[in-house]
Length: 523
Image (cartoon, rainbow, N blue to C red; front, side):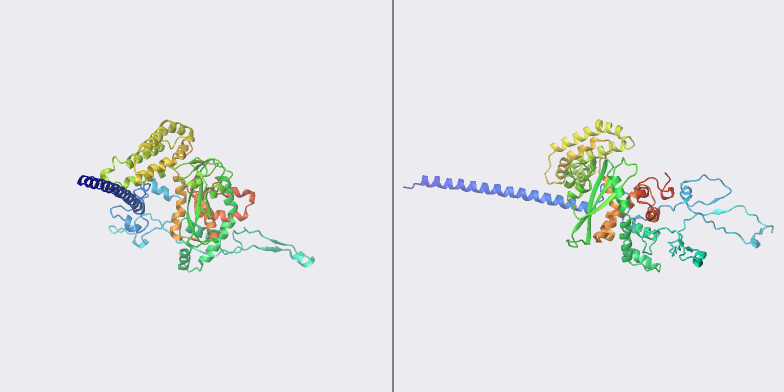
């Protein structure tokens, strides 16, 4: 028979079970709350990083970097004085300054302003005046490009005696230089002008078409595109020789970026292809920069390009490079610094001083500061100092990162994870004094292409993309070797069709034996 005590025990047991269920449910809700809180923090971190990358200045950008748009308004400052134009007389001796030295290579045209002879009378005593010198004001004058038609007339010669007495008459023709594009009206200078505008000033062909039209000259963008592709085809021997010389270097840098090709076979117009870049390191006497267009961003691309090469390869953290067997991959500390810098800038100001991001950023800055003090040393001396001072600091950096407690998907946590994942490749930096702490050298070389891409957006065909790779290679290598790009291209386009194949190496921008007048400054 059920008693009151039995009922009380059952009620108490039910209450305990209910409390246990409530406790378990509460624990589940708390776990779910913590999960949502972490997700919220991660999403907020991603949003802050995205805003920072989109709107904040780059950590590598200098404070005086010019605005890309509204440049006149952004940089105008009425308090800045005009460049000083000195008024002097030839009676006074003056030491030549920097501005006069800069102008010394230019043609000087003098315009004299004199009084008429009948006005050279003294207003006081009416006696003749004598010339006591002059005041000179200097200004730079520009004459817009002048286009004209050059007629290359190769004269033919025949013997009149043979013409009268013999069955055959010898005809001898004067030799004329062979043009780069024999069936085209485009001269070496016109081709150099179009290519320089497109690949150094990022001026698309349709804008050049409009510029020619404003000068009263009808040259369509289709004509120019055909000329650019044909020129690139003619330059392939030079490009191949440059590639061959590049692969003789023991230290290289590599990078890649996207490129859109509208008419790529078996691909949508919106699909991405890639422009790869390989260049020599700081140890190269004559630097080389090679662009290569490829359909893919996969590891087989650099594997094929570097198939017979072994050495040190500077890269970012992209996994495709880590799959290469022969090169020793050297990581990029600038990418590590960038991630700590991003994490630092999204931390509230009152929390920055002792934050994990600040500590990591300080380590990076100290490593770069050491390298800056050794930049002028020979590789051997630099290597000794790195092992003595820089490597212990890097070891301390890694040890700190391994002990640091940060949420895995927070900004500091992502920076720390990136550092630790790249540690083996970053350590390779200490194997040779010729190596660099960052891959910024490759990033600087690929930047002209990225700037150009913002203007012309895409390539129309694969052939056009390959032509761009070749011409960027030629132009960026010319820049690295201190050449005047337009002058060098003019000279190259004139010389190439008239040069024997075995002498092609003499025409390359890195040859070091080009005519003196092609260099920006004397060697």
